[in-house]
Length: 278
Image 1 (cartoon, helix red, strand yellow):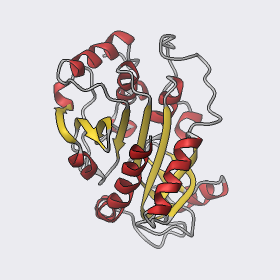
Image 2 (image 1 turned 135 degrees about the vertical axis):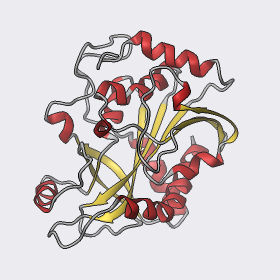
Image 3 (image 1 turned 90 degrees about the vertical axis):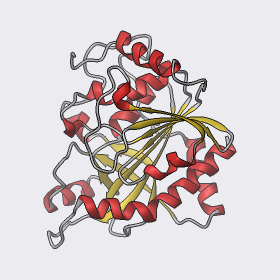
């Protein structure tokens, strides 16, 4: 398979999903590490393992259930990705964002993206939820932008604007829902790195100077592709660990998964409330 996904491949995957469900989803939800449980709330669900979809990359990371869940949630028809694919797994940027392209061809209007992230802002503590107001595209700036390669004109323009990647109306809804549910919602800039190694202290001090509040290994490429195709985006980071700016602590995947148990109910409450308000 070429590192650049074609429209034919995207449509082949979209057709395979259409053949397995009666649902015509409006909202796509991507669940990050340790945040799988929300998918279990989807009613009358059609479940499709990623392994049964043509061209869909295989997720290899613990904590990612690797299946698509389609159904009803809070009165909206949703398509939930229970686990995502990451650049560090060895796929191209075009391949890891194929699911977002498929959402676009299926006619989805919005994408809610979640992740587990390290808190770079010194005020953030594990268990916090951060509304992503903007992102720092470190991987794309250094030559791995998901829009590199042939532009698919049917999906979006060659040079798309990225000045408003996260939708202001959806952010306002998220703030309102968090307030009503007495969830302390942080806000800030998410920085996407390639991983899979966690950041060193010098990396983190550099990112903090650049305005980063939370850091992770996903999300930004998905958001760029969603915006390229005209989707509205809402992003939430679950702060799973405090970034190690001075080298005094170690970060582990187990720690990230454990924090997900505290974070998931908060993110679920916010996403459910936003869905209800649409």
